[in-house]
Picture: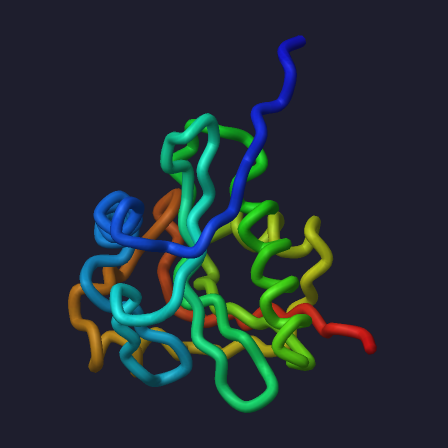
Length: 164
């Protein structure tokens, strides 16, 4: 088997911004709804994954109070391990800032992400049953059904608690 490609995580800058925004826009449009509020993923800090000098993924985040919220996480799919590398970076950013947890929201239809977040050590902190009804009031373009034809109804909040 071939060697696993190196993944470098860097702060998003002018050289990576366009690719990061294009990927986020393709996945979520121009705004993200999280816990009853609209967030512009293009107007917050982000880290990008690079492999062999090529853009491979992005994690956009907010820091509020004692936690870091990953607002958008996306990979081009071209390189294995990008999601894990970006989430490791989010934990590192939170730890360096003295925060107590990293959290993120996904929807009930996102089965691959639900499995991934648990594999990397996150736990389910909360399920917002039927929360997507309210989210659609803020962002009407959220579809009624998602991956594999599953109705998009609930927000699932994952967390990683930082020891120390």
